[in-house]
Image 1: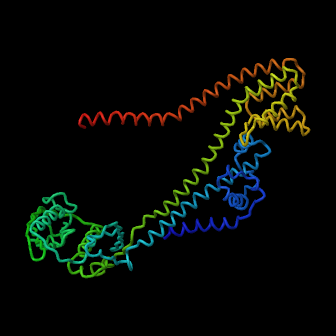
Image 2: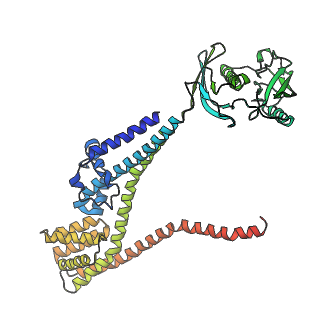
Image 3: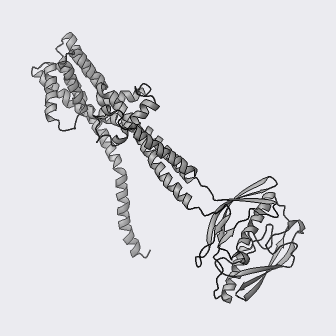
Length: 496
């Protein structure tokens, strides 16, 4: 029931918040790329939680490193918007996970609640005719003189008495069954230190068993051993009278009993065993229901019966919360991977970019004109949403110059946005040329172009190694399959 309540609270809370958040931040979400943000339906709710609950509307409390990564990926202008959408997407993912686990938990909880089998606190229904034995799992809480014991027990209930034909062979089977089960916790017939398990019925048959003891003051017909009266090493003969529809069989069992101290808990356990034996006695088989006693031994022992609670729903919800937290923080790793991919892409494009720039400057163009031509050529070649980080940053630099910024400041910002050592060196060459007007610009650019090509080789080699590592597992799997294809026919031909 507790699991149903928690699941219902989670689902109801998310649904109510979702309804309340409808229409929130619509202006902000108009430009949202729905292909990129798969959970766009939950973005309004996420933004509302960020602004109203978590108080991170201005993103001032977020990790500075994440902000830097957003600037590297999307530029200074879009970084705050992208950062806000990034956090909203993470929260949306957590909400989706919690809703999913809550929904499954609610279904499981309702099914468990409807599958209850303990009626009125201490009544169980017997199986239908020909169904065989039905076993119920219950938790028993027993109290005696302040001592409380808890047991998880299985209660087998047989079907109502039926008339069927039995044979001596079946009685022999019952005799062997009793022999193998009567010891209970004892290790051998020559060393009895615990109560015996004297069955009154053979399970899954209609055989009844009546017990006789040559020392009833030491061992009762129920198998209870009165250890206070036992003298060490006392031999006792127990006789089992098996009966089915008037056909009987007698068998003697010789045991040797030794004294043993018993605790309150052991007394409760023995009483519980006797109660279970009485449930399937002949006089109790006339009713469809089996009433479990709430007191025993003239009220000296009280018993409370409960169906065991495994709290599976609560465990499922805890697992859902754990998965949500793991994914929430794992999303930052995706961001780091994007930054690494962006850096690799820039380094792969840089040699071509600087070579074009050097070639155009050598042909007599100024730096700004050469830059403009490269940017316009890129704009003509770009198709759809396929963009290149380096050329996008170069385009932004050209737009800054066109809008009135100085070339000096625009190139300086370009180096900062690319945020890689080779670009800081590249922009410093351009800025130094603008300050001093040196004639070594082309030479310096050629030198860095060679370095950029070497760096590109290193990046390409690294990416190749990573690709080969990813292929390692599929290759091993294919190798195992090939070995199986070869070895199985060979082993079969050898008779294995």
